[in-house]
Amino acid sequence: MRIAINAYFLEQPATGSGEHIYYLLEALETIDESNQYLVLYPRLTGSQVARTPHLGPNFQIREVRGAAERLGQRLGKLWWEQLSLRRLCAGERVDLLHSPYFASPLAPNVPTVVTIHDVIPLVLPDYGRAPHVRVYMKLVSAAARRATAILTVSETSKLDIVRVLGIPPERIHVTYNATDAGLHPIDDRSTLEGLRDSYGINGNFLLYFGGFDRRKNVERILLAYRAARESFHSPCQLVLAGSTSLVGHPLYPDPRPMILRYGLEGQTVVTGRVSEEEKPLLYSAATGFVFPSLYEGFGMPVLEAMACGTPVITSNTSSLPEVAGNAALLVDPTSVDALAEAMVRVVNDGVLREELGRKGLARASQFSWESSAAKTLEVYRRVTQ
Image (cartoon, rainbow, N blue to C red; front, top):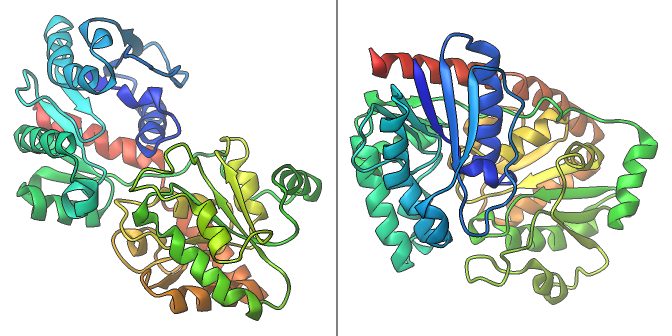
């Protein structure tokens, strides 16, 4: 079987979709020695250097140049998804096209699998108001209904896809995400102290790591921390980690003015973007990880923190209980009081931290990219029979 994969997000490695395709390709290479893969991504205006995995001879990775490159980022991406991929599938005589994010051709010319990680613009009104987003979501939603099969990353997302898109559940297959093997507990004291020094962190800290859009609930983290800090038995800072490149947009409020407004300067550190190499250090150094997102299709940071043995506080809504299982403190993400109480418990109770860390490691070990790739390969075979 000759399989084409839309690898657009290899050029955005720091995104969830970028990590998903990178590790999925690595796992497919590990378990599949019989099929041929054509891994395609476009050269567009402003394209970043793609982060491509080291793959064997069954995988051909190709950057495609053409009309999409001359059309600007937004229109070029659309051209790539709807026209370029169809042409390449015909010219390369592929048996199947997989688009591992929510964008497949409206008029596919080969059996098509599309991965829908979430339907955020369709279930959270603030994320789908812009006219270009509304038009795009109508297009990709119609395309998804025509796809041969749908993959998604949680049972929660599957239920939302059935409800919002009206796709029969038997056409939707759950293949969970997993973590990079490089994410594991690190206990070297000098290395962890070096990380703290590099970011200006003094001693113990609670960590948030992720985006800064409204659904991530960062303002409530700040309010809960302000309410909880006086009850900590020993000082504990709050660290907000993640890229701040989009802050200032109405959907991406800047946390730094909030820190000043709530009187948390000196106690709160905003790191900016964290490298892949620093991720396990940051998780491992943290006293606890706080992730009270209002909605997630999966919630990779929760699994990453668990893989590093970090005690986790997360939401009792959307996919997060599905990912965390019984290995985290689950709280109502709309309740500042509940979040503050969980912070106090994690900071003050060493026995609880040890228990959550142990359970988290066990929980994270249940997710693997090889398992996800095997289920993906099973779907490939099913739709081409």
